[in-house]
Amino acid sequence: MKKVLILAYDFPPYVSVGGLRPSYWYENFKEMGLFPIVITRNWNPIHGNALDYIQPSKTKEIEIEETGKGILIKTPYKATLSNRLTLKGKKDPISNLLKKTSTGWNEIGQWFLPIGTKYELYKAAKNYLKENKVDVILATGDPYILFKYASKLSKKFNIPWVADYRDLWSNDITMNYKPIQKKVAQVLEKKYIKNVTFVSTVSEVLERIIQLRFPNKKIITIANGYNESYFKNISKLVAKNDALTISLAGSLYNWHPYRVFLESIDEYISLKKKNLKIVFYGINKNEEIKDIVENSVNLKEVVQIYPKLPYEQVLDALSKANLFLLFNAHSNIGVGTKIYDYIALNRKVLFCFEENTQSSVFGKNFNEEITSHFKNNLIIDLLTNTNSGIIVKNGIHLHQVLDILLNEFETKGYIDSNIKNIENYSRKIQTEKLVNFINEIYLY
Image (cartoon, rainbow, N blue to C red; front, side):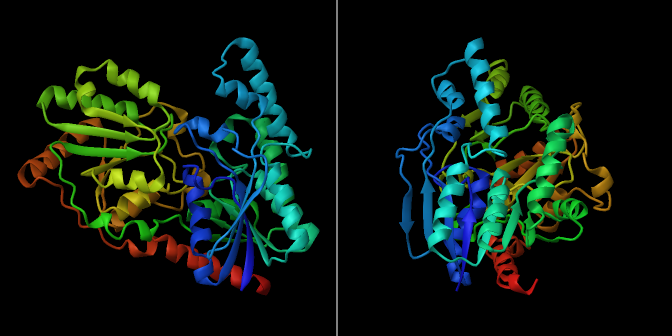
């Protein structure tokens, strides 16, 4: 059985989308013929919010867990000066200057010096490889510093390595407004991807973008998908509520039309006096959403906000919704993770909005010259192919859609869902595809 050393920064018990992919590998690789050794951070998520990312580990020692599924090596995390000031709630000018200096020192210095918050993973991996033989190194990013570590370990121990891009590196849309950082990232990416055996990524569009950057490298798409083991029972439940319940889990971004959505809901309730409930789980814009809600008598009655929950708990909470909410990023780059969970839960998805309602430049397709041959929005294609989506054009159209849905809800007490063709989007099928490529790695 081939042994795979996996470098993964995000990993349970820390709650993040980035941790789902390597967690599934650890849980299932062995059944598929690969033995996983995961090197990650020792997480101590005690806050239930963004502070979990900077919370120090409980111990300063490396913890090693050996189970029937593989080996899990958890490295200690020591808070930086910036972390410590943030955890103490320091926001004065001097503290802010110190936080920026500390963050810059670690984020920039990690590429050139043996420092940084992820360096413990490299040390643990190097020490493990000195005493143990593995066949492949698999690094998932971001953080892309793990690609540097995997590249160095590959050279030092003569082991092939695989780069798993969950997003873009130097081609990321945020880099368009950071020309110096973009140039540096391009240099670093070219340097460390040079000796990669193959690259995996999460969508066909990302595959094409990375392929154009590295035309001589093998690039494959391994979609995120849903974890089928979590959905055996809850996907069959019919959600019954007193009010039509629409739920969303995960991060909101500036280019998401959440303000337009909430304004439209506010107007609809004023006009129709209907019984609605909008529920947000683990969003990152709590204060902004609360401000919008507090300034509206109608929204105060219908919007509920809950903190981050562990993955299984949030799925259980989502299963109680009648509908799911998904915002359009207006970027034909990829498909986020949450849509697969929504579909697997067998609920209709309100996709808001097909029209670009945002004036922000983030609402544009940043890679139009690359993605133009993909005729439609990838998410709309997925929702259409699985019969799982209701494509809402704009705020006015949302009112019309809600009329139809509320009529069904008031008549039946639930919303029908006839979702189909979801099997190919399971993590099992996608992971088996990755395993096959890893098993064939010595043929390249």
